[in-house]
Image 1: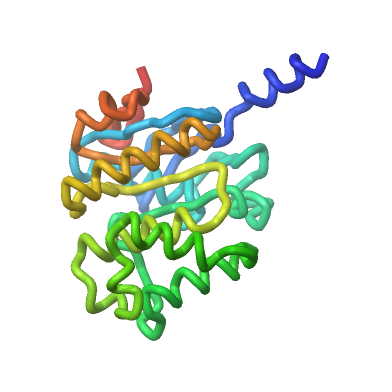
Image 2: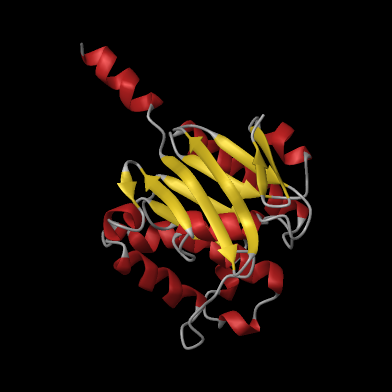
Length: 225
């Protein structure tokens, strides 16, 4: 019986969309779709610019309310039980936004405290910053960092807090090759620890390197086959 319960929990999706649609006036950016991502799954979403990838991620992350449909994060409705759903969800946009009055280090402190990571946050923050080559820049402000460094900082902020679902929009677009290798290693560790991961990319090689699934958006329609 215990094994049956554990098996059921592992097969329940961490992220679901049911009948999700997003329109802007008469323009339908995301046509009605359903999706599921389970624990230990990585999905790479490809597609041309303007195909609806970013709009879909915004709907799945809670930044943009769908015109119709539901988003569930570990069973919690993102738009009806936002607090519980967002405890389990973290999102890295392609252009992360920062508090201009906070340094790199202060961002890690703020996010740690905001998400209840109080004990041991300093060691964790130092480890993450060193891994991504940002330790020497810990006292710099985000606007003084390069685009690649700002993207790395966005990734660090996503990883400092607890989560079950990770969404990322073009996370490797401005990162150097060594940073990409480290990032992919991190994703595979998260996958092995049962996280559900969805990222957009134009690089189909990521699917092969990550051993993940390939989905594609075209003109607002999702193809998961």
